[in-house]
Image (cartoon, rainbow, N blue to C red; front, side):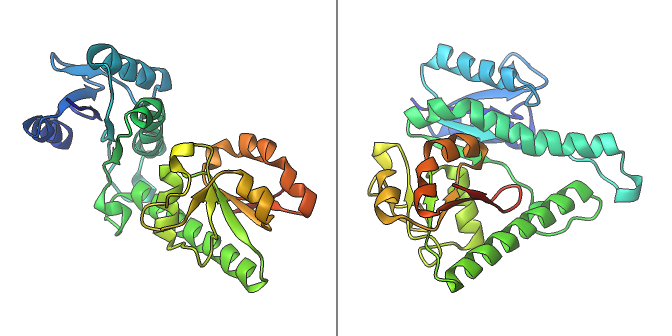
Length: 258
């Protein structure tokens, strides 16, 4: 039986989702900052607590097939009247909390070849009155898209070749959101042999072994697991032999020498 960890599971969407998945044959493990008999304790602001929650799931059920980052809060009011601490806490819980949850669960989910889900708000797509934190983040996301596309378009106009490094879910989400296909990115590479000679979902960008970069010598390597940019730039430092450069898309577009 497949197992799913759901944060923010004490009530609302989290509890309802758990009940529906149980009806479909899954084993839901509900987690919340307010624990109960059927809800384990979890504060998504605490990375160690996220790791302990995953360990609890594995100890009880032996596997983790999916994680649903559902915990979230909201602070209402116009920006001028919003408590700065409440605003920061909204970003901390809704954005960084989801990151900590997924990062802790990812090794087990990958091993099970499972799923990652994140609960989002409609305020992420259209401005919602009184939700300044959502509005600010929405604009930041749009600006990231604009800047990345500006760079890629300019590079292509200058006849530069661009490839990707890595095939993580978050990187593919970025590519799909920006509408980046093989017209911008020739291919990507990944160290996971199970991904070789397959395609990224949606973008249909081919995935090759890392040696492909040495063979084709691209001008730019777009780092899709941007949180690992230090490790990637060190392991792929050989691109400087032909003048290759790295591109980091998040939080803003940066071009780094190889």
